Length: 159
Image 1: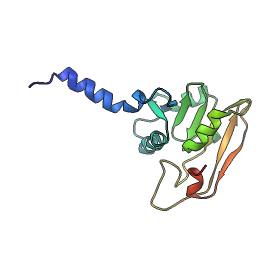
Image 2: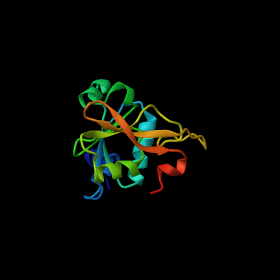
Image 3: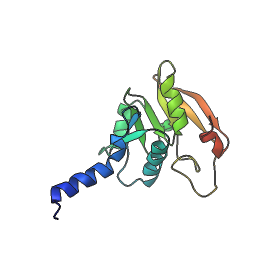
């Protein structure tokens, strides 16, 4: 039995985009990233394991896209998730905080950020190494406040 080239290509496309075809009630984040970033893919794996589906865009000018979304330079990391409602999730934000934010977004906020790339955050795992970090609420006026303090690796996953 011969399989057409088109059937093979469609099958590959489906497998590559499988998270997009996930259950209808799964929240979907559009992830803006560089084509060469591996930790971004690992962060998306974390999202998939915790109830999110993703789509990927690789803009020619990622920094301009972040500016257009209202993310100030001091809050940036290597990738940005954007919810269907337009909220941004900058960097290695643990999925439990994205879920909490989407359930009750703070007034005049645009999303959450984990600035930089803290070792041990979702997608930045390096053995048992871990850096404490903060998850910040990003506000429409460019300011931020602390949404969560991550003191241990378990804080990223425990409810």
